[in-house]
Image 1 (spheres, rainbow, N blue to C red):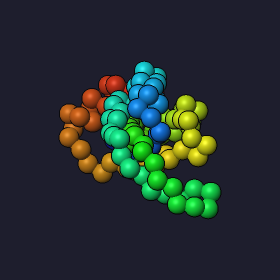
Image 2 (image 1 turned 30 degrees about the vertical axis):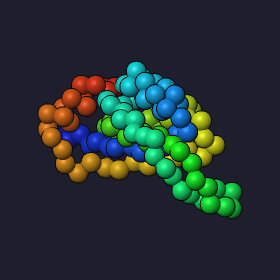
Image 3 (image 1 turned 90 degrees about the horizontal axis):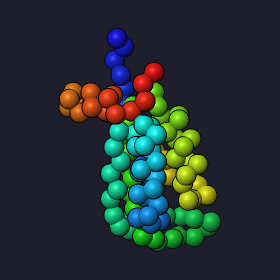
Amino acid sequence: MAEREYTIVFSTVDSKDSADKIAETLVAEKLAACVNVVGPISSVYWWEGKIEKSEEYLLIIKSRRDLLDALMRRLKEVHPYKVPEVLAVKVDRGNEDYLAWIDESVRHG
């Protein structure tokens, strides 16, 4: 059996309600094993030529690398922003029991 690769995806949204809806959608559709909702946080960023500051909620999404394209597509579909933050980071190592739990919790194939 080929070794599985895992990923953590970060995204931010404008409200707790949006964060919860996205988290529940990704887990229910088995694109993510777990989504942590952190916040509120303060974000400072460039947008349309000026510096903006806003209160946001951070999503920390745990999944498998082979589901990344589908996860990113779905996240963009349900995300409220015109240009959503979607950043994926490869997991180099992890607790083998936790990684096995991710495998059991997401789509197979």
